[in-house]
Image (cartoon, rainbow, N blue to C red; front, side):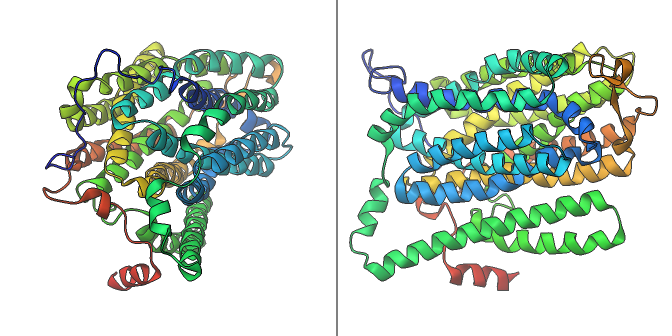
Length: 521
């Protein structure tokens, strides 16, 4: 750690030095990358099938819920996984998360009503939250610091093939067999990643971290009970965050004065819980780790929300089939991986902060361009180019922020801080979906229809009353504002000189601290 507090690259590697593909790391690298590959294929395939699923279940007005349910419950999974990893290692939450992830897909795929579909997405979100934090802890525990940027680049590269073939496969299956088979077919892929990664994971990253084990040696039973109570309290706070986010999402769809009551309750729950679950100073973008956590949410929230509405916009406003609408996003996986590969170059390590700012500017540019495609004279292929540029920026941002977070975290805090990073990611998605969902509904977005020849899905396009350009424009305007604000936050990633980052990265997890923080408000 240099005087600035930013993790610095280690010395030049010797010619025979190990890499992520050397015999010591190869099985685990392939295993965890396989899990990310599964998540990537699910995201691209399900996103493509979502417009027809919501239309068949008469749930277009609840379209945002299908995404926000996943992100809302993932908050609980993330915090639970962080506590679980710090106490028992990443193996138990990873295996449990994959099982829940598959179970949620089955529930959504067999749904006969929109609320059941959303419930399945919620179960899937818990599993996804468990998995993603466990993967970050695995990288922190099993790989030396010099190899972590390469592992993050491999994570991004695993999105390339799914982003290209996922929309094509999903669109073809949706049009010829039905959207349900997209959800029901993915769980079959769960078995292989588990078989590949469990043995090397047991050898290299099982059990609690060394720091946690040492700190536990002099503790008596009361001390252990206190730790368990604090861990349980953080999980209860995560449930409060999920409940608060759910109340805000509900209020955003109601659009009546009475909706202010659940909205106020949701804000209260979020303010109370997030002061403990996020590093101190996150909301005000304090320098160092708090800014890293905040920027992760701003980047992910602005881009993911904008991307979520692309298939629906192209199907209902430009008359594309679900296959072509999904393929518009296909180039994104390759350019995201390219951006992540770029940030992994050792010679760019001193310029990591600048790379992130450039990435945020590219994301804002891509989001700002998207609503122009609502104009009939603008070719749809230009949107594919813009989204590809935005994904390159996301590749620079997400991988770099992950590297910074792991470098600024003590070993025994890797789970907690990784959970905070993912919490910021998931919560920003929920809050922005609530905001954009309210704008979308208020401007008539719920009236768009997905119909095709003879009412089928083959030529899915806009219905007679399906043109609602103002609703989609509002979604992208809100997302672009958040992305532009992220450019400023990207300038605050360097900690204050002399700050002891690993020791002071996260707010102390005690009831007294939480109560004092609330009183200070």
